[in-house]
Image 1 (cartoon, rainbow, N blue to C red):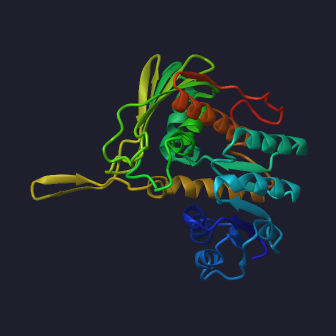
Image 2: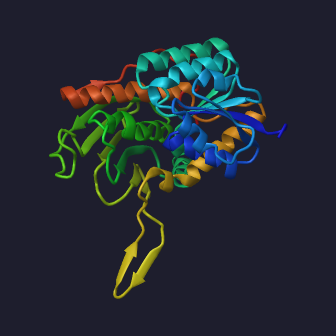
Length: 341
């Protein structure tokens, strides 16, 4: 065990428990050394059968547990800022699930804190950058054979939304993935957002604006539109089509098993993100473990997390007030590339 990267997992809910399983069963080179969750019973259930795992209700105690050399933050978004700053104070490399910090003011504090260190410690969990289809599309666009990207058409559908889901969360929780994916695919910042509100579906909970149509503008004149529909009822679907000067490319068409029987054919449709992006999560965490063991930090940076928070806040204002809302970013510290690749 001495050669393995000891990871403190903060949060043992749906996402945290899946990462604990992943670190134990899928990823090589790491082990779960500690876990923290306010619900100690849930934490113990998440690590049942794992040896040598310290269980805490206090995330700071988990960071200080023996054998911890890195942290994976999968707690609710409002707890991320404190955990990130604590990891920085301890010099711990960290993989933080999105949203990095839900509000842009707190996110900027994280950027400034890491910039003061003069080196990166954090990677933000925008896992679509590790999805095989998204990576192929990124390589195609970077190669330039299709010419300059003019538009991205995106679709983001869920079977149903949790009870606590609000209209704003369609943007700052769901569309936050498209925000980062668009910045990464295009290598550009998003500069303005407009949100259109079609008539809500009869299947949407009372008061929830669902679906929504979100339009982003970029710094070099491309447009990105996102249909977000979190109560579609039929499946989890994520698609993206890049329209360029000399061609287009589309990802996200289901390539799953088709069952033909009794004169009909049925195609499987993923029901949640942990199924659709299972390989991406595996690749993301394995890459993080590998580079961390080499003393490196790659992937989406805290600047990417901050930019996503700023754009999402602008989107929520556009939803609530109507009209076009400009995106205003703070000056970028020298530590960060234009858009982390």
